[in-house]
Image: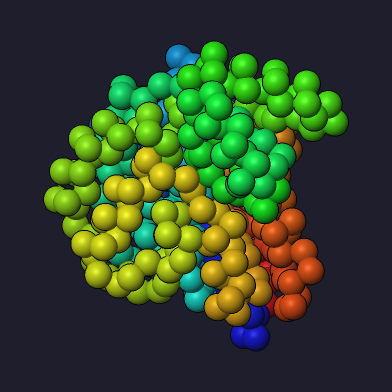
Length: 323
């Protein structure tokens, strides 16, 4: 793949599921070590939580975020263990929580440091946040006009015609009901989140998270990393990166901006690590979380785009065979 400009991608909340990581931990020694390292860092058995979820906690934000970060790294390390010549990416990006994994790949954060940050981030978002999120099949301007009427905020700009709104459950209920009444052929989709993330509902969580960010050992990235907050590459200065991670908590995830910035940089190959979505109950049944958005956003691009993933045993093995 010497002629490819590759970006590594990491999905955010909504891509967790009971049993996540169980297959790669059974197959790859590097994945097992990753789960052991995460458990030692977090102070609880994240393997049991991820593989079995006996207490039904995996969808609680305080646990979802460490679960996904660990799975991201376990899939990446399994791929690196198996591949004869693992790809070295030109850049990295992640959706919301996934941005921390991208910074780990760029060697700006160590894996334990990132785990400690997302542990605190998830705890604060769960404790001080409230509300829900809904993906609307409309552009930003239209979504904002609806959100404003119901005291909701914009939580994410995923695609030119897909915008996430967020707010109190009763406000979203009213918004969706009236939206469908006016647009009977369109439907919004509620997301698996515990709060109205990336909106004004997260301001108090962000205020309390600032100290953790400021004290974190974060260094200049070794490769370029896209900022959800800015929709473009982070500056190299660690303090600015921390500031953008702070603002990310209560500003929309500008995912379409990130994709456009990647394309403008000549990125032509996307590789997604970790997470999984779909109705199937086992890892082998899951499909990549970000693939659909990337393919829609890059349709008609001037350069030919390729997409690969490493989210379960089969896809890790397929990714390792890439030349």
